[in-house]
Length: 168
Image (cartoon, rainbow, N blue to C red; front, side, top):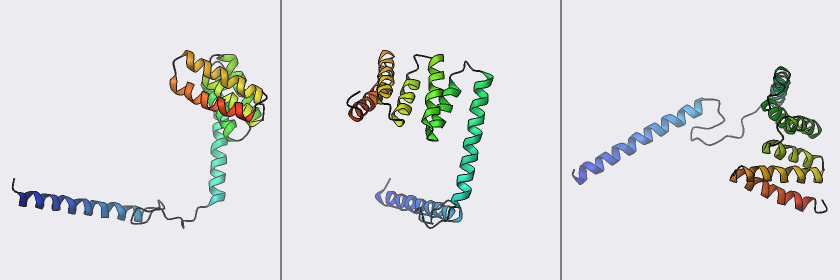
């Protein structure tokens, strides 16, 4: 293939990419995404915060009901306990999260994620002794199961907990 043909091919591909990029930017500008025709985020878009907060609260209430119903229907299933505990942590209700995770640990005492999560809940209520105890248990379980990611994560958080609660 001659050099002239290669140059023409490269120019043609460049033009095609420019046309496709322009069409993409036009599509973004016509949609309600909050982006302008260049693909840049536009902060001036007004968001109805009250409506969003109402929708979010309703969604979380529905999740809460659903998880409680799942637990009621099958109290031996550990999965909804995880979800409910996480929801309580998200809603900044650590006492309820602790209660939920204790119930979960009664079902599955060697659940490293449950120990990890209850440790976070105890940390939120400033109970350093229990936070460290459960993080150490999670670390041990992760280590015993050769879960390098979980072990590394718990070791980092355990170090932070021990720095936060030095007398524990």
